[in-house]
Amino acid sequence: MPKAAQVLAALKRDGWVEMRRSGSHRWLAKGDRRATWAWHDGADLGKTALAIVAKEFGYTVAELRRL
Image (cartoon, rainbow, N blue to C red; front, side):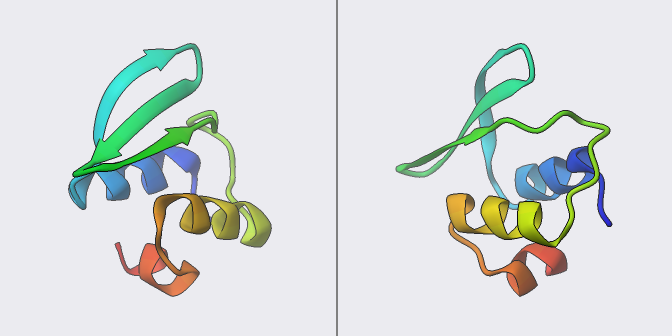
């Protein structure tokens, strides 16, 4: 299971930029797309959580795992 910090780092490597932060919530942007990251850095992202992140950021779970 990947940690939330690892998935967030992968998204940033793929071009997502943190626009602002409030506590554990981060607002990210890539081009004209916007999404909210609301996971604590140390949280394990299981199957369901990874699917939620993939959908919100416009990836499939397989694409997200490859990042």
